[in-house]
Length: 204
Image 1: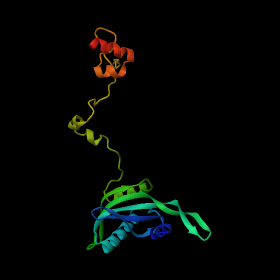
Image 2: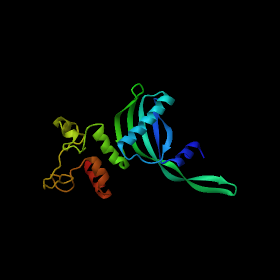
Image 3: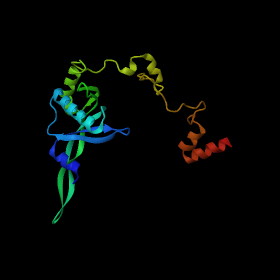
Image 4: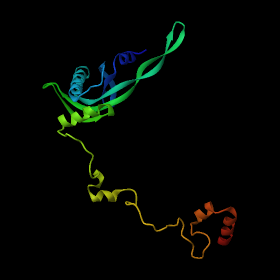
C-alpha cells in the first residue's frame, strides 16, 4: 500500500495544491481530522498550507483544494492468499480557493473561492467577513439580459416563445392538391415506393 493511502487513512480530508505551468496536483501537509466548522478555522488552515507551499515549493500564489477521502476497497496479500480491505482512496472536493500569501507581512488574500455543499455555513461567513456581503441572493435580472443587444447574439432565431393558437402544418399543401409540396430529396426519402415511381415517371 502506498504512502499516500497510509496518510489518507489517518485523516478525513487533505489539502492539495495545483503547482507549475501544468497545474500538477500535489498533497500538502498532513490530513486533517475533521471538516472546518467556521471561516476562521478554515482560513487558519489555508494559511498553514500556504506557508508549507512557500517553504517547500517557493510559490506564493496558487490554487488550493480541500478534498474529503471516501471509503473504497483495495486488494492486499496475506500469508494465506489475498483479501479485500477498505481504505479512503476516493476523494470528494469540498472547496477550491485561489489564494496569495505574503510572507513579509504573514497575510493571506483569497482572490477567488468555490465552496461545496458541506461548507455552506462557512461560505456564508466568508462572504460576510471577507467581502462584506451579509446575504447573497440570486440576481433579479439575468446577466445576459441586462443589455438588450445581448439578445441579438443568441444562436436561436426564435428568441421568444410562440403562444399563439394558430395551427401550423409541417408541410404546406400543394396548389394542385395531393402530395405535400416538398423538395425532391424529401419526395425521394419519405414517399412509399409506388408513389416514388409515379413521381419519377412524371419527372421523366
